[in-house]
Length: 212
Image (cartoon, rainbow, N blue to C red; front, side):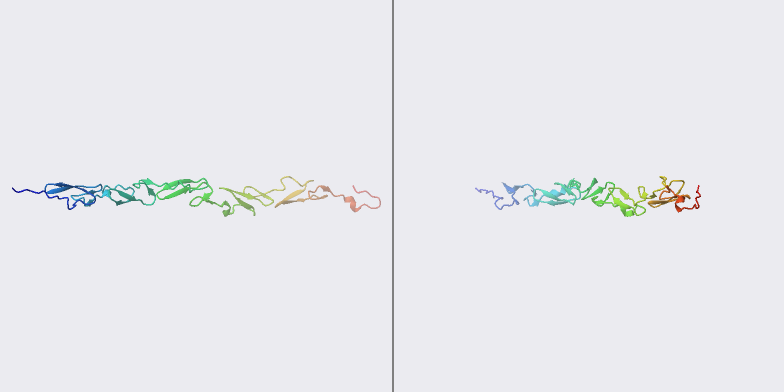
């Protein structure tokens, strides 16, 4: 009588990568650990084959898993989230922030400029004030401080000092910058021709005669 002996095919540990071996008659079967496949569990399953990473990220295959290497501007397990660069409020002085991919754009309020709207535009740079007026820069505006004798938003007007009729007794007023001059009629004098000249002061009458 011949006795057949079943050889333990698992004795040689044919299952790799922590696979479990089950002996069969004239054979074996491997139950693979997660992440492996094949008759002897020698093949690492490529979890990147399904392209799980988004936004052109790079998939890095691991053991029973994967990781995504995101491009700048994205985050998340699958790089599915666009990082909001406006969260840190980079735009100042009332500007509006627009989120872009790995960047942001600021829409500046009137009167401001620069990448983050941090620059106050100098409205005085164009020298808007006339007649040696001094320009005072503001936010989206300017103010002119005029020299004496001028007015207007840009000091463009020569003030007419004759408009108040300072000259008296029919005198003619001549306007100057910040000044005027009265040209008096005969018989009058003074800054405003307000003084009636006393012709008798020179004693023109002799021998008791009177001057009328």
